[in-house]
Amino acid sequence: KQEVTQIPAALSVPEGENLVLNCSFTDSAIYNLQWFRQDPGKGLTSLLLIQSSQREQTSGRLNASLDKSSGRSTLYIAASQPGDSATYLCAVTTTSGSARQLTFGSGTQLTVLP
Amino acid sequence: DGGITQSPKYLFRKEGQNVTLSCEQNLNHDAMYWYRQDPGQGLRLIYYSQIVNDFQKGDIAEGYSVSREKKESFPLTVTSAQKNPTAFYLCASSFQGFFNQPQHFGDGTRLSIL
Image (cartoon, rainbow over the protein chains, first blue to last red):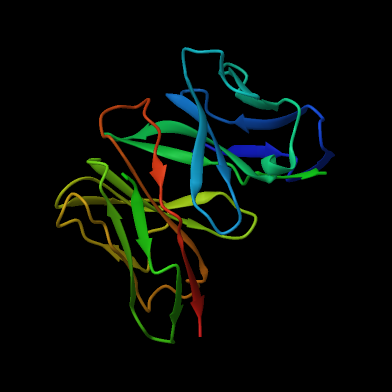
């Protein structure tokens, strides 16, 4: 059974710092990996999706990398801002029978201090 | 605007009562999903539906029921058999058969016990 782990559970940084969030998964047979952002009391917003054949994806100040063989992904946030404060979750897509399913990590709660 | 609408935002359940959470989407997505999120944890899959009139159990289906009579709608009933229903419930949808398309999420329903 796929398991996804995110370390650290919480992170606090001063504004302007570059930071890295980590995600690891136990079964490397994935279709893709996604990073989501969740604001308090809200649903999830997809930030980046990396297909299994890709090494990284970039969107603005965000860069996500994928090393499928070692079961690891990182989300790099450049020049962090207070508005980046949120919980960041990673999820991997695997198949169960004919359906695809997402397995989520428990998230990293990020606080960017002004 | 296309999206997923969950209602109500907050819901309270009395002992022995069944309650139904609504999820509607106008994204023309085939597949819909229900997740449960507990504090400090990732999302766990309750039920999913790939097509109208068909649905499958996820990892934690006990005490829940669903129906999929219309493509746009996927209501979740939390029955009295679910002894620990307090959680944040999230509905999602996606195009089926496209493994590299992200899931879109609603803003969630927070269920509490009276």
